[in-house]
Amino acid sequence: MTVHPAPLPEVNFSDHGDIRYLHLGTEWVQGSMRMDEPFDIHLEYVQRMMAWLLFVEPDTVARRHAMQLGLGAAALTKFCHKRLRMKTTAIELNPQVIAACRLWFRLPRDDSRLSVILGDAAEVAAHGHWRGQVDALQVDLYDQQAAAPVLDSQSFYSDCRRLLGEDGCMTVNLFGRSSSFERSLARIQAAFGPGSTWAFRPTREGNTIVLALRTPQHPSRAELVRRADAIQSRWGLPAGKWLRVFKAVE
Image 1 (cartoon, helix red, strand yellow):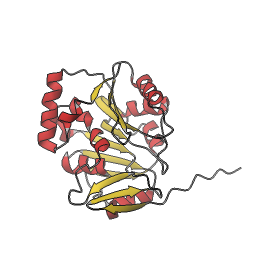
Image 2 (spheres, rainbow, N blue to C red; image 1 turned 30 degrees about the vertical axis):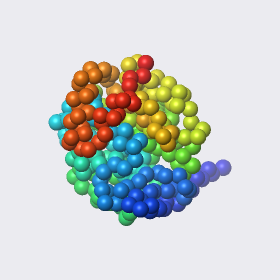
Image 3 (cartoon, helix red, strand yellow; image 1 turned 30 degrees about the horizontal axis):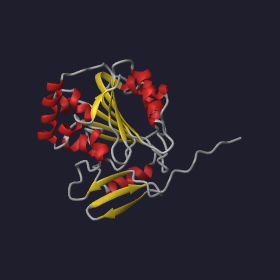
Image 4 (cartoon, rainbow, N blue to C red; image 1 turned 90 degrees about the vertical axis):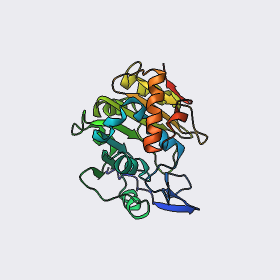
């Protein structure tokens, strides 16, 4: 019997004042953009996906490689490429999402530092091509129902860990009506090992960002404050606020 893959959802957008939202055929928001600041990050949980910056020296950022698994409205991809000047690779399964980001969300064309690739995140993570080459891996994989992460197994998170360089970091958005934060966190901890994970408190909307380090780090409070100040002054992210709602997970 031939098994046909489920059809990909319709992609559309809605505007509310200065904010444009991406949808996959439902009312669930898959991403957003402030139209007069198209290369900044609008949503709080997406800003928190940048918390890997707390674990690297700010002067090294532009020499690093960021990868997004799931393009959404391209906020992370645009910020890493335009604001941080990083080599940036995004993997997206739905060609309509890529087209929508280029038409409606100011995603630039590919260049020497930017590659937006039509592909399956699980296959990319499992493949050897980028193994050990990613410094900041940002995982935000939801379908049109936003019920639970599409990829959420220990083996997937182990593949993600193998993509990372020695001081690389993964940030994951955990959100959904049927998802279990504790179960997902346990899988991430099993894949990355003890002492490797940090987590934010949930946002008002219910998004919880988990951060996992390829090599465990526990910077002092003073060091985190120094880096947060640098992040805020250089790139305008609310990193000082992060430190009040972010801690290591035992």
